[in-house]
Length: 139
Image (cartoon, rainbow, N blue to C red):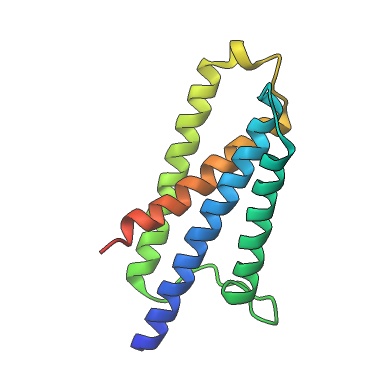
């Protein structure tokens, strides 16, 4: 692989990590928002705007080409290993959060719907993936 291709894939991985973190924060705000007693519309608007801004940045600058084809793996072996380990971290975090929610389910059963919990799990997965990529790729 050429050095330029490796730099391009590193940039693409960095954009994927930032996108995952922004999406995770937005989903976390959306899932926690109904449970807050003193909610404010600007908080939800700010989270949604951050998500849309990061999504459009991702679409314009990185992840998709004009043909809307998306690459699922990296050609560089090192980056592919980082991606695989990040997915392992996601699975462990999902299992841990599901276990914690199961243990605290008596207190949450009245207030939380299935869609809220699904959004919370997606937020956890997105945040862990993004932070895992950043943690592994630090130099």
